Length: 203
Image (tube, rainbow, N blue to C red; front, side):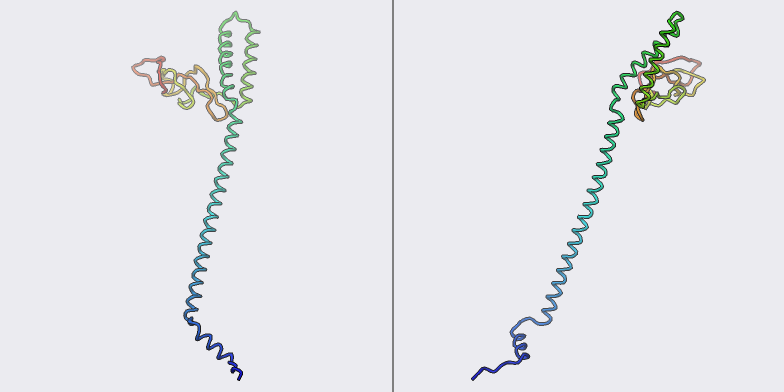
């Protein structure tokens, strides 16, 4: 005798009876899976934010590096001849002294003076072409950044701490000090005494 066929409803009932899971268990499992997915999504978002922040920092560091290299290259270009030009200032000093000495000597050959003057003018032209300019000192307030005080002089016609004499000119290369000016600085008159007073330090 052939076994009796079971209906679809009966088969489903048996399958449900055999399975220990209930609808509540299924919903709980689905909820847990959703929570896991949410946590994974949040973790992925946090990781993405971290990568984005790191990329921004790296981009900023690269930009700063490029700017620093550009500044260094610019400084190298601007100041690569600084030492040579500084040595050339000694030549300028000697030429100026020679002209001053020759002008004070009435017997000196005028042609020689003119030759030295032209040499000085050409040397100063070369310095100017390389952005070397003199420091303005006479009559200016003493500035230890640009001036080196060699002595003080009591003066009643100048405010204190004013440059009243220049022993040696100072020079700038671009905006950097190439050589400070050696100067005499005024001070207030005391007890009617005037005249220079040597100092060992900056005013």
